[in-house]
Image 1: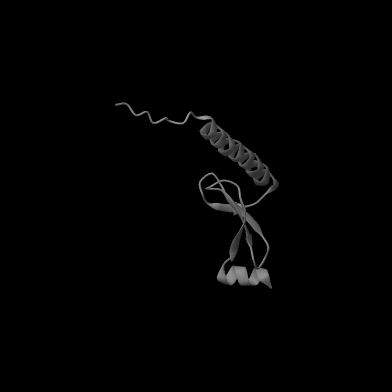
Image 2: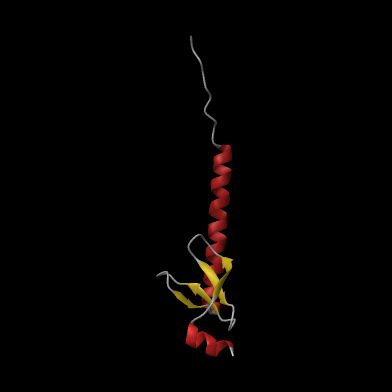
Length: 84
């Protein structure tokens, strides 16, 4: 019954995974089909190839975010020096 509803009224998506800030994975609440955003920003069906791409993107995104945090923590703090 879910597929008929989706064909008539469209899918009802919910975000199931945030890969990066711009790339997400979605699941239709009715028919349970999974989708993701492609390189153009359009929704496309989530295939094993796209799932693998998303895994790699997520790992790169997490590593870069962690490196930014580490770099910020290691950056020398500016000292306020008062002279008379």
